Amino acid sequence: MAGPEKIRVFLVDDVRELRRLVRLTLEEDPEIEVVGEASDGHGGVEGVAETQPDVVLLDLSMPDMDGLEALPLMLERAPNTRLVVLSGHEAGRVSLESLDQGATRYLNKAADLEAIRSAVREVARLDPPFVDERFHIVRRMWTAFLNGAIDEMLDEAHPDATWRPYAGAGRELHSQQEMRSFIDELTTEGRVVDPRAYGVEPHGNGLVVMGTLEIRGQGGLSETEVYWVFCFRGAKVSVAAGFDQRVEALQAARNLCGSADC
Image 1 (cartoon, rainbow, N blue to C red):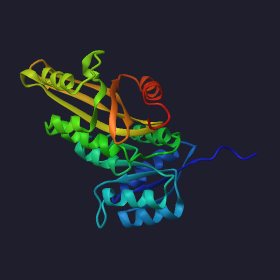
Image 2: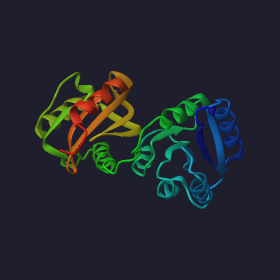
Image 3: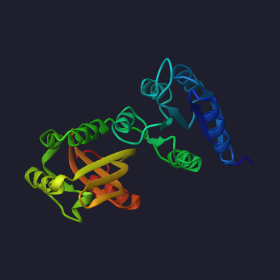
Image 4: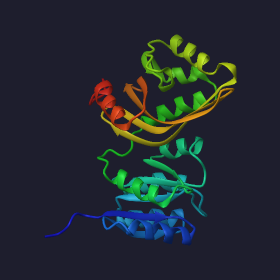
């Protein structure tokens, strides 16, 4: 009797030594098989199209064609592939762009190798769809917040959207004015609020976005892992809520967002 199918992985990175190290780490797991490698974006696109892997580990900074250029081409040629970006940069604006291009996860190369292997196993368990164009809305909203353009951020949501900000300690806000006041309150006394995203998963009519929330100010620095849920009505956000635990976020996506656009 045949055993369970292995997770088929393709590696794309211009550093041969890193590819070798990642390959050895992945293949220590008997359920993972590396089916190919490439040293640049062009070779990666061709190799992914040929092998149709379950997961691609994709470097961003490469000659000829970088990872952000290669990413949508890979998804076009292998739509059932999950893309995990490896980068030398911390999550931030570049991770938002990677997720917006269709990546499922964003990992810093400084992460330990076990974290890379765990990410491969995690994304391989996901059910389709693996990308959702509504993340464009979230990215615009997120970028507007980072730029201090709060009115632009709110324009991406319905006027009667429900907001449950993670830093709100359970508060629920139901108008744009309430959300503006909350942000003003949060950023008083020179505090800097820096949300960062490193993963996204579509769930029914919602998206679960994984990341961290960092708040810097006179009281010092606080940073915590957060799971944000975004629900949609048409082309605008109807619910935005933050949670401590993934299981809470998944349950909220089911309860708050539903299974179809409403």
